[in-house]
Amino acid sequence: MMPAADPSGITRYGAAVPTLGGGLEDDGEDIEILELTVDGALTMVGDGRIVDGTTIMLLQWLALNRSS
Image (cartoon, rainbow, N blue to C red):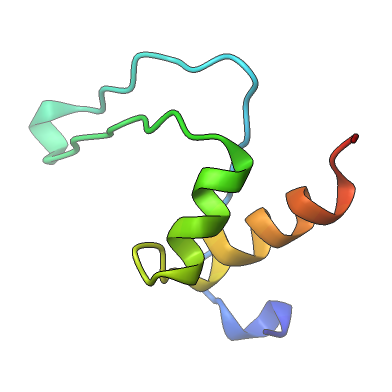
């Protein structure tokens, strides 16, 4: 996917320490934090539970750049 293919300007964050989630109830936000291993998340990509392109790209980058 080319950078211009996603005009929404989504920013993804990966963190070693999970936060509580949340969001602004008045804005209809309900942010859920999922704590997964990298291998677990990649399995979810493989079996179709994760289908979002930007998330898949982030996970691919992480898989290629994580320390062994």
